[in-house]
Amino acid sequence: GAGVSQSPSNKVTEKGKDVELRCDPISGHTALYWYRQSLGQGLEFLIYFQGNSAPDKSGLPSDRFSAERTGGSVSTLTIQRTQQEDSAVYLCASSFYRGNYGYTFGSGTRLTVV
Amino acid sequence: AQTVTQSQPEMSVQEAETVTLSCTYDTSENNYYLFWYKQPPSRQMILVIRQEAYKQQNATENRFSVNFQKAAKSFSLKISDSQLGDTAMYFCAFMNGGSQGNLIFGKGTKLSVKP
Image (cartoon, rainbow over all chains, first blue to last red; front, side, top):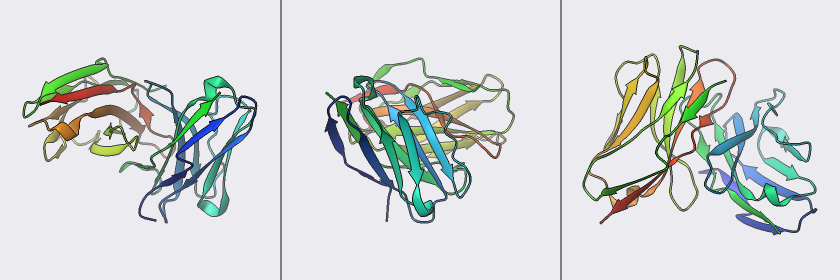
């Protein structure tokens, strides 16, 4: 596609439920990133996929968070047993190789845990 | 670990005037990249300008320019002839020049352009 597509745009879930957030990167981009942006805060790195290499999971805040990238394209971020502190905007980005020319971001998914 | 600091949580400027947003960073690396991103209310992060650390010349993109002071580890953004559409959050970001790593962001500066 022309840009990075994220779905859903907004998600309200009950505490304790699992949620899946989807990211469809730009075709041909080898790298894909997930960031979390809490209210009024900067972007917190979560996880990074590069081609067929093992992902860099160093930013995942707990074992309730996981992500996969199928076929080097679409990625799904899963949050299990959601907590209220998981409420945030989850941003996905993609880039050619390392992204030293910059990342292209999607519009994010706003997750609200009630 | 690298860190990025934006010391101005909020700023305002009159339309058509010039404003400078500050950013400092901390790294022991010599090769890296610096970026400014804009985030309007639509939430989508938009790349404004990019600087390669090994280039001494400051990057410029139309009304946007940077003042890159490598020794001082400073990377400020100047917006000339401010427009109402420039109202947004602005984030400074750092990337290591090695083969691994990701963008590290500052906490952002909220810029309001007033008519």
